[in-house]
View (spheres, rainbow, N blue to C red):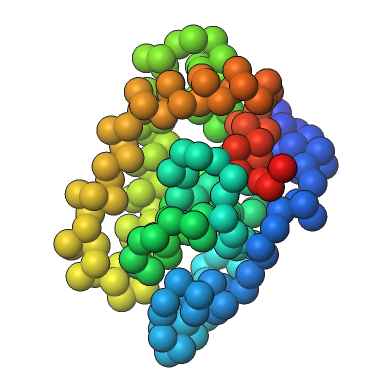
Length: 197
């Protein structure tokens, strides 16, 4: 456990969150993606109780890949404003990525999600990817239900979980981008893919 805490402390000390554009309040994020005022208030109040440490950023990602959302470091979650998708999907993504931020702080994220790509071990990557994506989806689905979006979940759960089967495609994309950007951690890779140059 001590090593996990040290890993996160080192990462946090070495990460610069001031260069992440588009920081936005939860209320403003909800408003920008299309929720009405009453829903924005409900979601914002829920978020302040349940995810108070998570900071949202909403800006157009630099990547040519259709990356919809990411966690960047510590408690910073970014959603791609360039992509056209339903407001409920963008809310779901923000919750999903907030769970990845939790997973990263637990200390194993790079081991299961980044190192296997560096090592050329697709099978290990796909196993780790499936597990981390399923856990993040489970969390986001539970949050959406808690927020009153049961109908959206009932209709979209299969689509929402589609990323759990994309491990091989993500592996190849990450392999190419690691080679191009010379990244040495997952956060470094994501930053090089999406932050303005």
